[in-house]
Length: 310
Image (cartoon, rainbow, N blue to C red; front, side, top):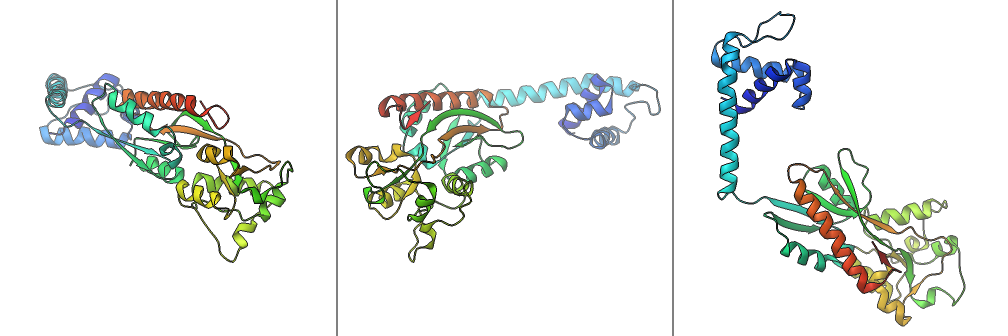
C-alpha cells in the first residue's frame, strides 16, 4: 500500500476539503481524488460519503484513520531510525565561480572542514550563467555567482563585492590622461568566455553607450580568455585590455607593470551572491552562507578595501 496515499487520506480527513488538501500537498484536486479512489479500490470499500453537503467519512473511513495514523507514524520512525544508524550522509553540491577560487576559497574550505556538520560537500567551478542554470535544473544545492539571480523560488544572500576595472599594460594609457569609452573601444579589448558574467558585463557596458563591436573584435588575430589565469597572462603580456577584478593583479598594479586604465565611465563592482532553493537542509544552507561571509571577511583583511569588501 502506498504510504503517500495514506498521508493524503489523513490530510483530507483533517481539512475535509479536496481543494485545500491539494494546496497543502502542492498537487491538484484530480490527483487527490485519484489517490483516494486507489485506496478504495485496494480496500474494496468506500471511505467517504458521496453527494453529502459536507465531507463525511464512512464507517470504514473512520476505521482507516486509526490504521493510517499508525502506519504513517511507523514509516516516519523507520526513516528516522535508519538515518541515525548508518545511512550515508547527503552530498551537498556547491558551485563557485573562478574568482572565488583565486581569492577566499582556502579560508572557506578550512571553515567547512572544522564545522560541526554531517553532510559531505562537493565543490565545482563554472561560470555564473552555467551555475545558475544548474541551480534551475536542481543539479546544485547552492552556488556563489554574480548576482542576484532573478529566478523563481531561488533565494539570494549577499556575500561580498569585487571591484571591477579596465586593466592593461602602461602602453595603452598616457600617464595622468583620462579617456572616454569610445577611445577604450578602439583598443584591443579581450573578451572573456562567452556567456560568463564578465562577458555579459562588458557587452552591457558598451551597449549602454551604443557600442556593439570593439576594436579587439576587429583584429586580424582575435584573443579570448576562458579563465582568470589566462586573462592575467594576456593582460600582463600587453596583448590587450580586459575588464577584470584588479584584486587578481594587485602586485603588478603596485609595481606599475599593469595599469588601471583611466576610463571616465567606470565599471560596476561584482556583487557576489549565494543562490539556493532551500529545502530540507536549511541548517546546511545557513552554515554555508555564514562560512562564506566569514571566509570573505578574513580574506578582506589581507588585501585591503580598495579592491574587495564585505
